[in-house]
View (tube, protein in one colour):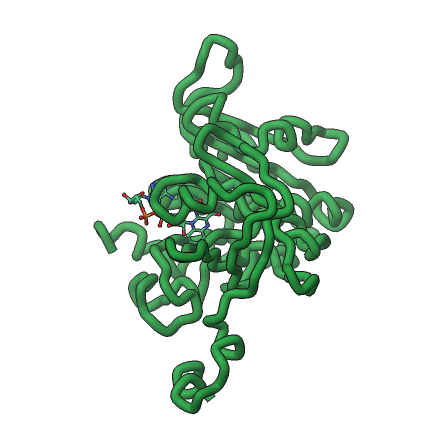
Length: 287
Ligand SMILES: Cc1cc2nc3c(=O)[nH]c(=O)nc-3n(C[C@H](O)[C@H](O)[C@H](O)COP(=O)(O)OP(=O)(O)OC[C@H]3O[C@@H](n4cnc5c(N)ncnc54)[C@H](O)[C@@H]3O)c2cc1C
């Protein structure tokens, strides 16, 4: 039975996925000037098991609801970790929630990063700006599965050194963890001695064996468009290159069509897509 016909027949909204569950803010951490990570806990104590790449719809009473990726560790479903940038009414309200505040959660929603495809291969994670949040669960997974992967490389680009998300954690990763991290910024300050430029500048030098690489990319769409081109241009198989797409969402469960991207509904068919499914759509202006 479809979700819509379930609603027609009077099936309770919780069974259709439209009723938020009450969660409480257990802790709050300011990541950047405009960006906060919340640790949420279910009021009923039921953990929210999720897969890397999935998102929730976060609801602030009386203000609204937005899609937010889960940025925590799939091995720790007791804590729902979400990282939010304050850009509009709802995201500002979420960022302003204090410890102990209530928030509604629907989900987990959407598909996941196909992490098992990287087993026995080189894993390259490419992120831009806040796009590091949706790929962080892959990093946790890769650290826990390091011996099953040939290598793990993270390529991260952001606007400026003070905009590096999860900086302590990212800069703390090292060869000892079997992870190589390349960071580049658009604009350096006087203390920055690292790379300056866009992420695509770093991709070719960090790729090991492109034929044997699985790549997972998240960031602003323009960054993903050029990263996809750079990865596949350097020899990473297009079908082994995955991107997490973003459009404004309303229902999050494939009813309303708000997040349509060509033939896809991002909430229902994504947010993670293999590059060939979205390559041409990304070059259509304002699609
Ligand atoms: C699958 C998915 C996962 C997402 N994950 C996250 C996440 O982990 N963290 C997160 O913060 N957001 C995430 N988003 C974006 C989020 O759903 C909202 O779009 C965003 O928080 C803005 O909502 P708002 O209602 O506060 O602002 P709106 O009222 O929608 O927007 C206010 C203004 O900000 C602009 N704007 C909207 N989004 C952005 C943006 N991302 N950067 C800069 N300007 C923007 C709009 O164009 C508009 O001018 C995700 C979206 C999707 C579809």
